[in-house]
Amino acid sequence: MCGIVGYVGNRDCTKILLSGLEKLEYRGYDSAGLALIDKNNNIILKKAVGKLENLKKEFIDFNIYCSTGIGHTRWATHGKPSVINAHPHLDSKERFVLVHNGIIENYSEIKEELIQKGHLFHSDTDTEVIVHLFEDKYNGDILEAVKETINIIDGSYAFAIIDKENPDMLIAARHGAPLIAGENENERFVASDVPAILAHTRKIYFLDEMEIVLLKKDSMEFFNFEGKKIEKVHNNINWDPLMAEKSGYDHFMLKEIYEQPKAIRETLFSKLEKDVFNIKDLNLDNIHPDNLRKINMVACGTSYHSCLVGKFVFEKTLRIPVDVDYASEFRYRDPVIDKNSVVILVSQSGETADTLEAMRIAKKRGAYTIAVVNVFGSTMAREADGVIYTVAGPEIGVASTKAFTSQLMTMYCLSAYLSEKMGIAVNTSSVIKTLKTISPMIETVLDNLDIYKEIASKYYKATDFLYLGRGINYPVALEGALKLKEISYIHAEGYPAGEMKHGPIALIENEVPSVFIINKSSLYKKVLSNLQEIRARDGIIISIATQGDENIAKYSDDVIYIPDVDEFYSPLLTVIPTQLIAYFIAKKRGCDIDKPRNLAKSVTVE
Ligand code: M6R
Image (cartoon, rainbow, N blue to C red):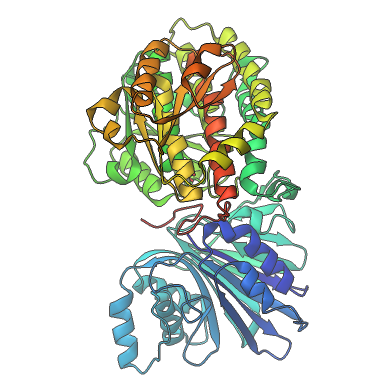
């Protein structure tokens, strides 16, 4: 949560920082702010509540050349969204200015002490203590002051500080929140995430936990928290900056829905070598097949739903039990994990605090951890024993879409790959052949949007929705409900269709739509009976069915057809209509689709 960006160099940096913040806005949009140092070493500080566009208004006629600056986009934790609580924050003498992503857990004790020493605080944030503490510790040596500050603060953070007395310098540190640095000739950058600076450089350094970076326009030095200089190697990022643009779509979410055929195709091809599965970076040699007696899968939100599909996929293919946990539960439930355990952590961002901590717990207990992540170089990717990348490209919309289908594709590939390693008789060439057909099938689902617009017009005023499915499509029902609630603010529940009669059917009345995932499957007749039970109580039925199932129209108010595909692979297709239903309903309700209220793309706080 929260995004930070910083610049030191030869160029006027106001626009560079504002466009960096645009790319980081997915991390929070309660307020935004910029601090710049001008040629006369004055700090120019501007902040605004709400979305970045409000901050941009503050810069309409701004033409002061500034070549050092920091910016912030906020997801409020301590102190409500207001100008006073917006970052950047100044020290008492207004010499240093700071932006921060994370939470300082011992801020109130520190604040008390500093107040005793005469520091004057202005905000309700935890963040403000960092800059005051830094001021207190500063004795002419910026690195020393950072070292002393981080010795005292507890919690998670990535912060960046600039100093009006040393205007060509920026110092930043990381502990528990992501931070990257980038360089070009005569200019250096820091940011929470790659897209923020991708338009300017692809030469990126990923800071590890407990590292500090000192930027000057023509140099960059890294240190550990003891202040010892360390050497770091840069990565060349091959994401195209255009991937992080809307490219003519109304919203990132719609663009990303349309990118799914490509995302799953590229994910699949990245796991193949000469038409045989080969998953690099997995370090599979470290797992003895005998250890694969059970798999634990851990994630949050949409990634959790992809794990629920993964359970079906791994159990069916490998015939070993799979446990799936919410990361926020796993980390506190003393899970039965040891050196024989294989724990798969799934995360688009690779930075979600709960999933990251779950991974660390699993590692501490000796488990072999595999991270399925989308963001290259993310913390999970670097800390896991093995990593598998989904190749979805940057996902900017807060509502996860292409990351989900790419994660599913990864599960199909991984399960087939593991089956080979374990000597289980699975016809992997037939798996590959089928997986290759999915991408064009998704394209046909995306061909015609009229049905979704019609459904949106009919039901956008509904106050409750149900999403129902069974078997491998039950997780898709959960995912469909999550998508609708997070972007349209309509209450929605996903349920196993067979469970309805044990309680939730009491909710059914003639204004409650139920979205049934009723594609061709071994459970088709069972789902149809569940559908009839809802219909008998006057519920509205929207069916997601298989092409050719003319019968279903008789029992449904609306039908969306998907191509005929084996039920085992069907979640890759059935989920697409649920994304589009959510998108068009939210659009019809005038919601801010890419930036839903109270949310942030990457949940880096507990
Ligand atoms: O980056 P991650 O996959 O770890 O994120 C997990 C969830 O925060 C995320 O999937 C969230 O639920 C999305 N907003 C859902 O669309």
